[in-house]
Length: 174
Image (cartoon, rainbow, N blue to C red; front, side, top):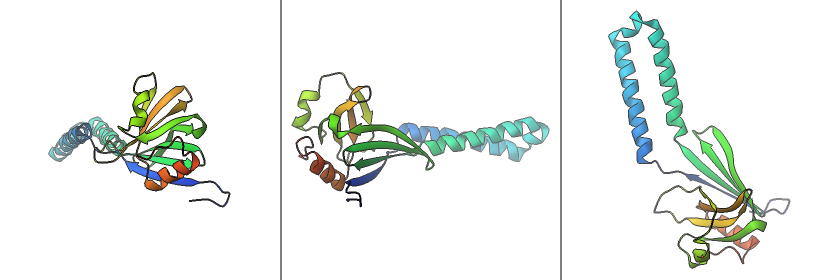
């Protein structure tokens, strides 16, 4: 998409896959909540009002723990700038990384021969993908604010086309 100012713009929202660790945390939170409800029903909180306040605090903390396990990544490409934002719990947005295509060395599909020369080397690794093995991941290699970076992400076809049009010699689509 081209905006009225002539900038190329595309964005993608990717949901991170729920892991076994996420499920374990949810089950533990459910067990704790069940115990608190059982204690309430049995009348233990009537004898110890301070325990009721403690129990309410624990349930509220559990609520936020479960909410923050839902993570989504948003990629925004605007005329040479690629931003990665993390959305946690449907209400918190944080810019995780922003890179410029002037510092781009290559973008290629994971496992591509274009990435062979970058297998060995010191770089900071970021994974902004869904971590779903059935999805096609791409790798961005270039300079970041603190040295070279390797970024795993899952751009849409439209975003890949826009990035290729912006820098055809560095964006490999095969």
